[in-house]
Amino acid sequence: MKHLTPCETHTFLEQRPEALFVDCRSTIEYYFVGHPLGAIHIAWNDGEDWEVNPDFVAEVKRLTDSDPQRPVVIICRSGRRSIEAGEALEAAGFKDVINVLYGFEGERDEHMHRNTLNGWRVDGLPWEQS
Image 1 (spheres, rainbow, N blue to C red):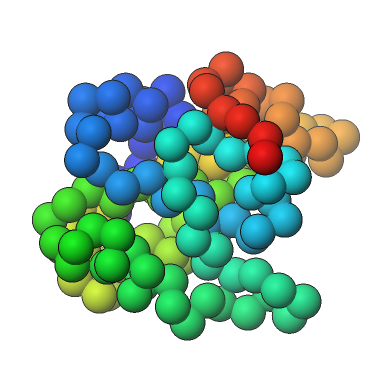
Image 2 (image 1 turned 135 degrees about the horizontal axis):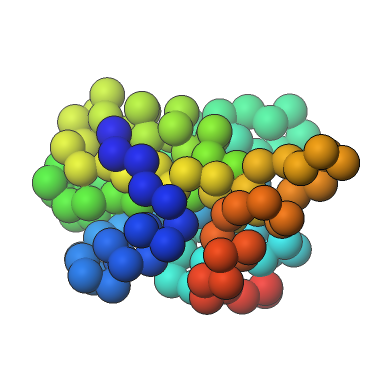
């Protein structure tokens, strides 16, 4: 799995429009916190019990037309869940999986707040809130 900063990821996505950009955060995070423009939502964990989505890999396969060579870029809140999701894709045969370091909201600062140090939003990359 490759790891790119948000700015590197944005450049990669501009250069590789065939890449699938997956936001693997929960439904609530995706809609209420916001999400990168162009990211498709497929939750890795969701619901009351924060269970792993048993259909995650199948959904990605469907959206990539089962092409294991198609790049898949994954983002979450801070870059941790996306590693787990990426590992599942690699185990399923995907060859070009990219994790977005620091995720959408970034690491916590000394006050335990996100959106201050790094991440997609802090870097000023395009996003929207639904």
